[in-house]
Image 1 (cartoon, rainbow, N blue to C red):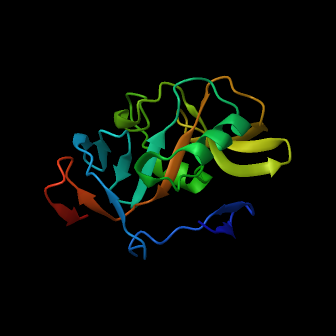
Image 2: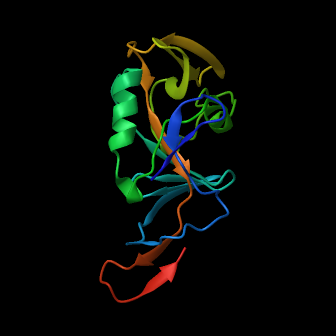
Length: 173
């Protein structure tokens, strides 16, 4: 997949098709089963969470403290659902934020127990921006920080020809 200059962060990121465009190459994968729905979000058995409003797909990272560099490498190595994952922008993370009294300001389908999540945006060579889901604010800190940080992978929704696990038929989604 070719890399392009990201208009916001100025870094090379994988080129993605728009959410409404179908890619020219269709991948043949089995259709993952739906595990849960949360109004706006649908969680699948392969841990992918589809945001039905924005057309983005999300994949929660390891449930452990993680630095920006380790998170960046993890996102680049993920092949779940055909790959193409990247770190989200601050704007995309803000889109997940929903202020409420219970304090769970992100859908429980994401199952992240901490509040800080890394973005792809950097402040300089040694610092990156994060998003805190408790108050809903953004901040920058050293890329080597890992305490209370998690990582989410994101990509535009993919369109596949899904083949049932038994291989008996296929459908386009």
